[in-house]
Amino acid sequence: MPTGFLSKEFMFDAEKFTPQLRQILVAIQDHLNQVHPNQPAYLEIKNGGFLIRLRQDDLLYIEKVRRLKKVTVVTTNNRYEVNGSIHELASHLTADNFFNGFQSYILNTEHIQTVNFTLGHVTMSNGDELNFSRGTIKKLRDFIREK
Image 1 (cartoon, rainbow, N blue to C red):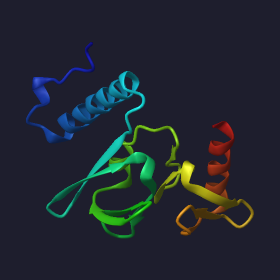
Image 2 (cartoon, rainbow, N blue to C red; image 1 turned 180 degrees about the horizontal axis):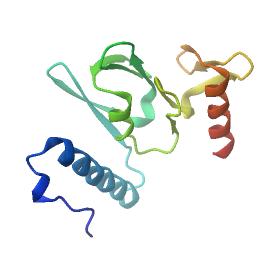
Image 3 (cartoon, rainbow, N blue to C red; image 1 turned 45 degrees about the horizontal axis):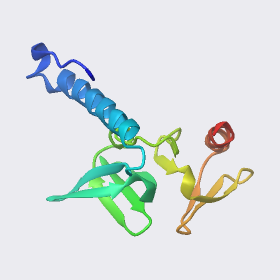
Image 4 (spheres, rainbow, N blue to C red; image 1 turned 45 degrees about the vertical axis):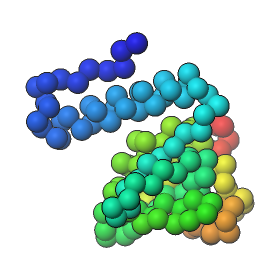
């Protein structure tokens, strides 16, 4: 089954080739998730010289580090500060329970413990409290209602 097309024309142009490659890799991951639905999805991140493989179910949230091209990945057991962007990591998340309607966060809605829609407070399953504006918290409420 074809999953995409990589043009030789863009092979040496990273700006055009990388998005094409990412799109095909996401399509392959989606296909694998359909073929093997019981197999957990993973997110691979580079941390220094290490490649860390995290179960997507274990991700609580991803937070952008202000003024740096870094993000903090928070899991049920650990925190990792890695180079990259929110959008980059979002493209690798395959589960439908990730809400990335924020500019600086991606939340795993399965790990939200409480939401105070009036004050804009979200408490995650590890006890971390995150604060959001009214407009942003409204997007989260709509996302949760649609699920």
